[in-house]
Each structure stands twice: as C-alpha cells, then as structure tokens.
Length: 115
Image 1 (tube, helix red, strand yellow):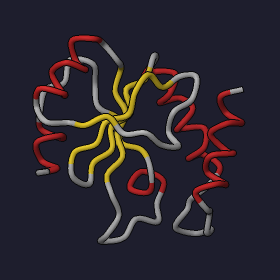
Image 2 (cartoon, helix red, strand yellow):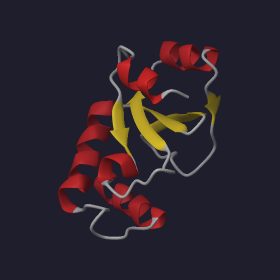
Image 3 (spheres, helix red, strand yellow):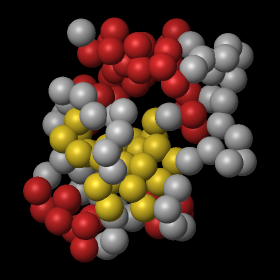
C-alpha cells in the first residue's frame, strides 16, 4: 500500500492520522493507523479497492468497522469530529515517545476519553 495514496486522495469525509505515528513512538516497522467518518458509500468504495474487514481491538461504540490494506489500518467511525477531539485530548496529556505506553494502556486512555 502506498501511503501517499492515502494522504493525497481527496476523501470526502476527511482522513485523520492516529496511533503511534500520531502520538509518537512509531518506528520504521510501525503500521499506519487512520480513521474516517463512516458512510455506506465509502465502505463499498474501500471494499472495491481491496480493503479487507479486520476483526480486532479497535472496535468500540463509536467504531462501525475496521479495514486493513497492507500495513494500513482504517477505522470507520460514527463521528470523526468527536473521535478527533478524543484523540487530541489524549495527545494533550501524553507523548508516547517520552513515556512508554502499552497497547492496553492506550486502550484504557481511549476508554476514558469516550466516557
């Protein structure tokens, strides 16, 4: 997957970076994590482009589906503006590049800002 495609495509619903590449702590082997506003049309477009549904630990009350293509994970969420505010709240209080935070700890932080 060419990451430039993700960044340079004009997505009607917006494209938001998240995960270690947003919060800090990414390395050369890190995957890319994004989220977008879910629409049925967007979902069908992505499936047609070869994205595959991914079961996993991203799914929560605000997440409709998670898709994967190569090393890119894409969360399709009910309200991307709310998710972006939640992401920014976490980022305001923690920089993973300065403090080691496990995946489980990040899940707990996401749970806190969603409540």
